[in-house]
Image 1 (tube, rainbow, N blue to C red):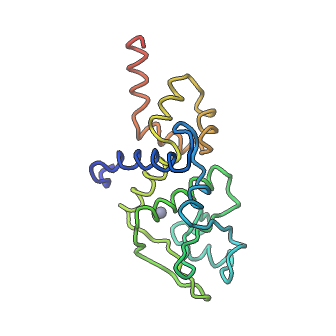
Image 2: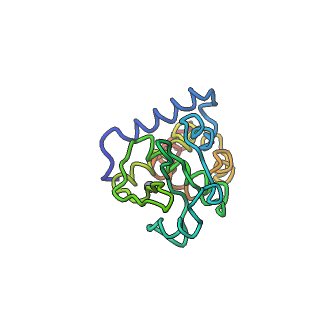
Image 3: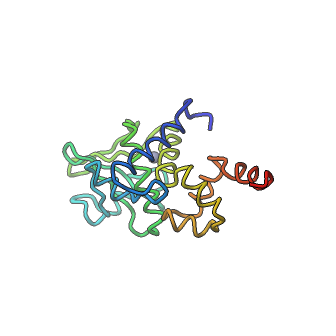
Length: 193
Ligand SMILES: [Zn+2]
């Protein structure tokens, strides 16, 4: 991940620990993005909750993948609201919400914003580095390295681990790759540990 600055991954792991501590959650357990959003004072809506923005308009506004949009952040006054596509699976929604929260936590400024007819701003276009950072933070918040390592060390199947963190298999695989835990597990096995 050449776009990520030095120390960023460690910062993300610390954030994953910090938010779990603040929310009195198990360090090895899941972090529900809706609970984190509430803690950060950010609402999570579905398209039908949005006054003045139709689902069709949202689709159009999310230029990245208009037929398959996941989530977008809007500004209502000074408040930020995440709108999530509730047609997607709960695991995918978790990922989408955490991704949007990550942009907010990282104080990313959208390169492109759109204004709805009712004057709400929709933030949807971030640059590549910001996307990398949001994906990294989001994945780490959902599946911290230490927790992942502990579960895999205990021999649990990947599907069980994904269910434990309430994430999709895609997110779990991404985390296994990015954290290098598989290598560590291999060494342990070969080392007789
Ligand atoms: Zn993004």
